[in-house]
Length: 169
Image (cartoon, rainbow, N blue to C red):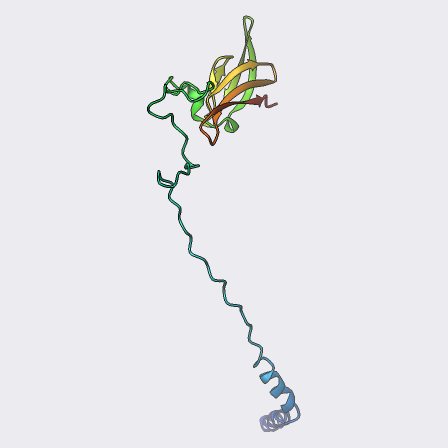
């Protein structure tokens, strides 16, 4: 009986080994031979040319604030802030990082509660400074803090800019 199964298995294997699908096998074998992807060459990168702002070019460095000339009275424009006054705690943070989180009245004076980025709460009133642009609190209402900032433009002159902090509900 084992002999019959052995003969049948041999015949089945011999039948599968025909040349009937030889052309199909050849096609599959050669179908991917000429299909190579072509990647374009990367563009040439131009070398970055640096520019040095110095006294020889007569072009002001846009990345440095202008300072008064040594021979002048020390003031450049009527709006120049007091650069030598002691800074208050909230002047080390940008204005956009400060949040008004509360309002309270002490007597007849309105005070605001401001949260700094470090998580500390600060009580401020009109006349206090906050923000990095010499911001002076001009008015506090129950919903916002009005601020006058002093910024320096590209010519070195100082100008006022109005900003506000809205109460976060």
